[in-house]
Amino acid sequence: MILMNDIIREGHPTLRLKAKEVSFPLSNEDRQLCDDLLEYVVNSQDDKLGEKYGLRSGIGLAAPQVNASKRIFALHIPDGENLLENFIAINPKIISHSVEKTYIETGEGCLSVDREVPGYVPRYARITVKALDKEGNVIKKRLKGLPAIAFQHELDHLNGIMFYDHIDENAPYKDIPGATAFDRE
Ligand code: NB4
Ligand code: NI
Image 1: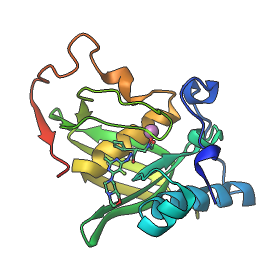
Image 2 (image 1 turned 180 degrees about the horizontal axis):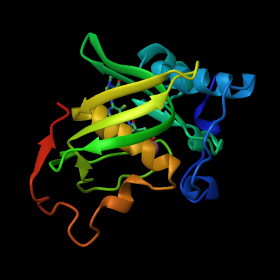
Image 3 (image 1 turned 180 degrees about the vertical axis):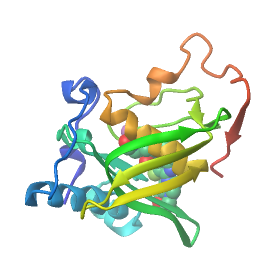
Image 4 (image 1 turned 30 degrees about the vertical axis):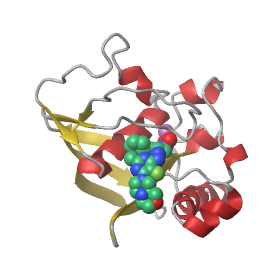
C-alpha cells in the first residue's frame, strides 16, 4: 500500500514533468499502480487506517506524486454517506468546459506540499471529460463542484502544474470575475 513516504514533495523534478500516456493492454505494473492510487485515497479517508498509517486524507492522488510519470490518477469523493465520484482516470482529457469559473473558498492543499499556500485557485465550474478505465473502455463524464475542481487539480499534476501556480501571489484572494465559490462545509 502507498504510505506518506512514497509520496514525493515539491522540489522533486517529477512533479514538474509532463507525464506520459499509458499504453493498453495495461502492464501488470500499471494495473497495480491504478489500484494502489485508489486504495490510498480510500484508506486516507478511513479514520482508523488513516490514524494507523499516518495518512494525510485526500480525495485524489496522481501517479507523478508517487514518482511514476504516467497519465493516471484516482478520485474518491464522498458526499456525506453517498459517493459522488470513485474512479481511476487513464490518459484523461478535458473535452469542453464552462466559461464560468469556481474556486474552493478555503483554498486548496496538496499531498505533495507540506505547507499552507493561501489563496483562491480558479477552476472551470463545469467540465466534460474523457478518460480510459483499466480495461481501456472510454469514460465520458460531466463534472461540477468538487469533482470538477479535483479532476483539474489532478490533471494539472500530469502536466507538471501545482495548485499554487494558479494563485495570484500579489492578491491571493482577489475577486475572480464570473466565478462562484465552492463552499466545502
Ligand atoms: C487534492 C484536492 C485538493 C483540492 C478538497 C479536499 C482534501 C486533497 C488533494 C481539490 C483536489 C490531494 C492530489 C481532503 C478533502 C473532503 C472529504 C471525506 C472524509 C476526509 C475527506 C477530506 F482530504 N481536499 N485533501 N487534499 N492531492 N477535501 N476531504 N472528506 O485531496 O494533492 O493531487 O474523509
Ligand atoms: Ni495534489
